Image 1: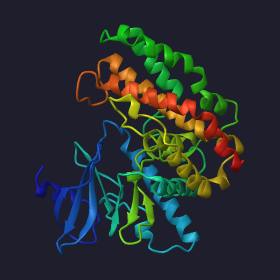
Image 2: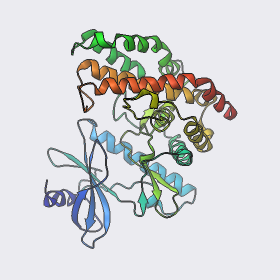
Image 3: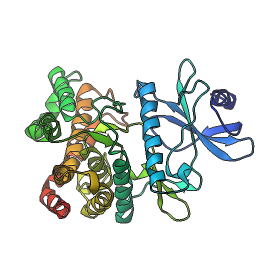
Image 4: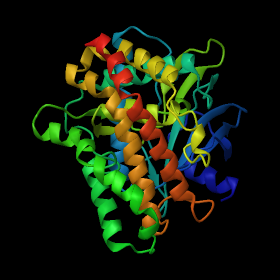
Length: 363
């Protein structure tokens, strides 16, 4: 698309200043993101093309975001906090009043660019603590949204029973003829299957409730102030939806507390970094403890094992299916990912007692 194409799309939104140029921005893998410069030379807006193949119900997606951002602003106002345009994302309505514009083929949205801010890619204990506080506070502010208010933007995203059914369907069909080469790890997955469906069972028993989660708790989904280094706000709200509280701490443990890469070919590199776990858990509990139940607190370390097991299952499912979902860089990439995630799961299992013991101080 040309710059004039982007400007035509932007003309359908209620912009305070006219747009002059839209250029690629960031490193997101799902939506196409562009930074919009105004006619006065100011970088003021973010334009995104929504990937409606993943987020199939764009109306629900944007309604979720409207509810979440307005609720966060209300909570911040009640705290007498200022600079609200930098503490929460602000999405602009299109000329029909919706928070998106459909050009007949693609869906687009615009939000204000938060000035003097940055996202970070590297992780250490100090940043993990700040990330824990940020995501805990994010969940805390949304904890009083009534169940049923938000929809699931990706249905069954962190539903372990659903992911296991997908896995078993793949094993049964064996469409790529790869099953014989992975029977050992298939067996390891099945050994753990019942123990990894605890949250769904507890929900049916009325012992675990659904809460609003971010569902992509990586440190680069937090904006920090350029000067002070303090947290401004949580971003990337597409997967904010109902689920279990284990998802958010679990996904951070899986990604942030891994000493290796998600697809590390050298499994000796892959272990859990307990310093990162303890820092994140400490920050998280500082802001989230007020709304968590004792059962949820006790299960938080299990969340790390659960999300790592889930990703092991998903990578192996895709490998057995012939690599139909995840982008791969070589023919065995999904198997390499599977092995790296399974090694992390084994490390988390070995540290389970220490992690569970660490959480007891908050009970």
